[in-house]
Image (cartoon, rainbow, N blue to C red; front, side, top):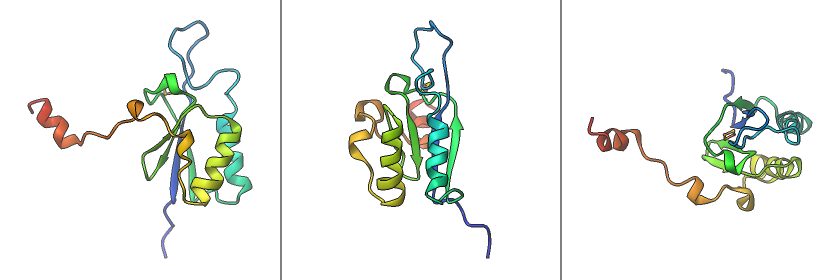
Length: 124
Ligand code: FES
């Protein structure tokens, strides 16, 4: 038997802008320990390995940050806090139900354009 794939990847934006920059960012002094909290919550549940937390750079949804993306499913969560992360782990990752009230607004996360369609739009 081979090494099992993770069931979920959780990508947490870890970008921070220097103080005074107009662009908001996902990591501020108030939110800088959210990734650590996420990793600890996964460990506490005993599901590390089948749930893989990953630090990413900006995913272009800064104004809704802090954000994280759950794959599979393309589920983008916004406005994260430690309490929200705990609920996402319990209800979505373990329970199998997306926590709809924490999902980013559709206007910030609309249906994907397939790469083939994008190539057509670009006339290539
Ligand atoms: S800084 Fe996190 S989405 Fe841009």
